[in-house]
Image (cartoon, rainbow, N blue to C red; front, side):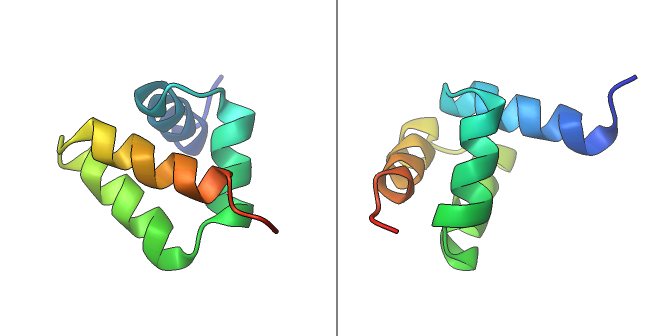
Length: 64
């Protein structure tokens, strides 16, 4: 049985067009708290998904 958090992670990854592992890695390890909040807020509010994808990809491509 899948838990609530796993379902949310899958839904967010789907909206961003990435696999769940990539989504979790970027949100937990590469995004600032503010960036993660902005990405999630856009998706939750059914905002401009392309804007969320752009923010996500910027974070994903950051140097560690």
